[in-house]
Image (cartoon, rainbow, N blue to C red; front, top):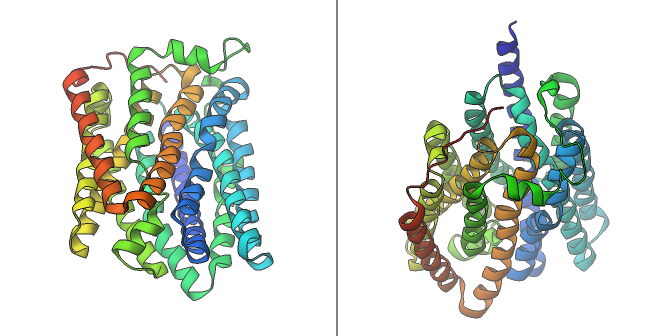
Length: 408
């Protein structure tokens, strides 16, 4: 088999293993969310659960990017995957061994550790992907394929989690979540053969800092990171408050939560496919791309604030999924394709700080707003601010062009 054909097969293997692991992860997160909703019925606990998953990126994504660029993406990727397995097992054993407040705290601790390990895994995986392609023209479609596969996992994982909670209990869902981490571990160790000789590593502590990456990435990529973070703080709260949104709009059964998150995932798949089919063109117009996806999300949030029958709510949910997935995936794509190979680990870290850190803060803000003024008003505030920010970005920077696409 030719080198090009071998790399293509390895990309498929990596995508499949990651997709199955993602499905298990979202089954576990759905089970945890339902348990926390059932135990506490507190919006702030749900927000803390999502914050535990996302806010660690504010602290560890920078070091994760630095470590990836210093010691190599494959080493960091394998270490992070083993850490994810251990964190998942902590959540699995919390169900039969604990109850009440200790169980809630252990589930939050499990999710916190998943968030920390996941920040390292995502950072290393972004740079690792560039070592599985033959030329730069393949990198953008491959990265966006990961977005599609990730969102397919989001689609099938929540109903699996809902079914397992209903039929066998949450412990089974969390056990399967932990077990699925074994697939990407096995694929990286035994099945994949990336072009490690092509990897560029930083050679000095001073040259490998996050500040150096921020300085050297250029004005356009710095603005991409800042705008993504701002839009996520304003409107990326639905993952954390999904159990509350589903309970108020659809019902309190675990399958209602599964339906809500699955529709979100369908929208995410649609947003990912749109980005994949237009990956090179969308990279060239970063501000227009990011603001366009942000505007879709904001308008849909205004629709959620307006309310209506269940089909309308699900349609708005679909658009929220498409808009947020497009925003997050295009931000990651633009910062990877637009940066040099030696910076890609740290650029992945900066992107994570923007969208996952911003999302964690957004969940906490939205939870407090929902307590104070109610969920519909929270959607109205978020959607209104999002529309203003997106339109301002289109007006001021819509013509910005990313003129230089870096080599692999």
